[in-house]
Length: 168
Image 1 (cartoon, rainbow, N blue to C red):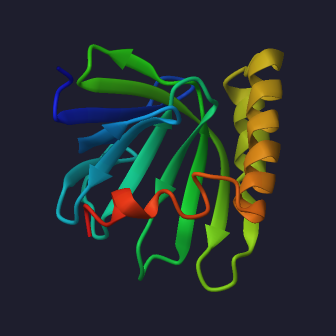
Image 2 (cartoon, rainbow, N blue to C red):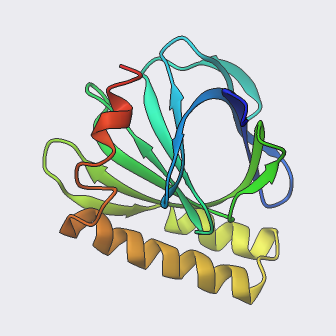
């Protein structure tokens, strides 16, 4: 039986701390593992203690180069996807990911989809020595997400809402 609480650990490619927080396992389906984070959850952001102010649901896909964060109002991003290494699970209660800088975001008010942090990706590609295969996978994931967030592909259209309702 999987653990009810999962520790989510994102690092940068050089191994430095990025994000670290506990989440509640909501479900697992063909898309991946759905995790819920409530407001008030203690976390670490860029190596510093923090507290989540707004709840969210995180989808950790089984074998994809991204994670999806689904947010309620008042957060301006309805969906925020981090381009990341495929998840590496340490038992059922800890998941490790490498954040690869690029983000694909859908804005709540307009539905506009944005690709963010291309400059950071280019800088870290050189500084951290991203292998060519990693660059190709990250860029392909960003292209796919950019289209999927805009065209109604699930889980980005409506299916995430049932999970988000459990944490708001």
